[in-house]
Image: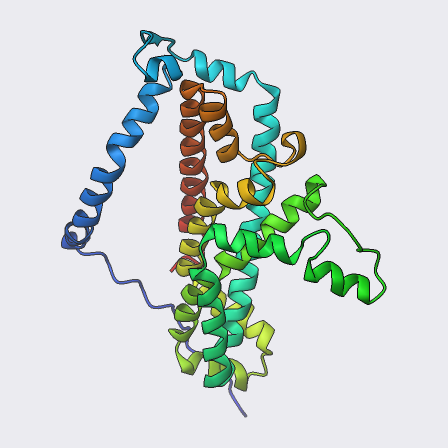
Length: 315
């Protein structure tokens, strides 16, 4: 008679308890960078908040008129403007598209780079670093030239294969202009995600990948269920950085849409603040927009980090 024995239960290894001195050591390591950031950012942020509480225009800046304290009047005026909410919605949508595009392209190319030979990988990184090192203004004008209405290479190629893109204007329509600018932003932003995620993928133990391969897992399933959860902290860093960069895009929008598009149809918050502060000479209102942008970015990044820390896949 054959008796069956129960397999011994396997318990997951407990996490190493955090020692009391870890927090103090981390604080000491971060102190120099924290002091430098505080020295560079504290006074400008203080001035930004201070100016937002005053009626501060060109006469006040030139010393020809006294400062008038308004309290929260600039904020009340800003929040009561329908244009502000329209621009805010467009900014959120534009930034979300840029962040998603940068993460998808950068992570996909990082997975590809980890699986190809050294020569194609070197060429991929050289091309990516070339895009990353291109100044925003130069990159914007290159993309404008490629998509030019009359002489652009893209229109020539598309019309040459029979598509109706002869003399097509990519920057006239709202969605077309936002799409073109988003493509340029993704082009110059994905290399950061590529380098960050590639470093994380190369840190995944080979034994784990070999075990998945022996179990018959496909490349897609291995990437989705094993690699990405293990590089979740790096993905969080790349996402937070992309949110901050793409939410405050200024140069590409200003250059490629000629200051915000036809009748301001392609305005984002940074360009809107510039127009209010410098074109409209309402520095107090422009400062209020800057404060609102800072609070929004802090809120979004804080909520994202908190959600990731509560995730079961947090490492």
